[in-house]
Length: 280
Image (cartoon, rainbow, N blue to C red):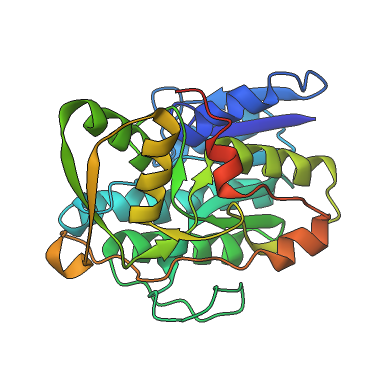
């Protein structure tokens, strides 16, 4: 089995490298943005003509949520237009496309966890670009899995975990938003779940939600991080109205995982358990 992973130098791509290191029965092709520009239509076509991939796992994305408000063209190029090229080539070569998407396709106004059947209505440009990418995958590639996830963190790159660890060394006090709710999700768990789906492919293509179990606020996540690293930093819960960002964030980003758990008999760890396994 031959598998392509795009965005190999991002936090999810690097987590994939960690997770698949023991799966020697597969032939893995990891492509960073310098190896493969997914916005280059010709480069994508040349690669797919040269290699016969069984799976393409797209971890490449424009993830700078606030910058996407002013850098809209680049966000849509990477998160939407590039998905056309990948989807078209996957369809032509009978390759299964696994695309990682986001909770930001929802507006966050629902009071309970979002299911795959809930109406999408993104409230920022990043969410709009990711939703358009989803639509391109659905329209152009018959064999696809769209995996929506939330609040992703790892040892790699810029994410909430690494930011909190850094600030704990620099500050004595922090204000953290306490009225936005979701589920911190370890990138390594996402990678393992996708590998599990590949190993147990039943052909049940479509949209799935995956995050760790449980839910919390950003304040609750920060508390757990500081407790884990033994930091005595003082943190204050604040309203999102007092912490203005360029892009609006959904108030509720909790995802319902029943579909993926039932379809693939998948067991999902609680976010607190995954946090305590990470090496800092």
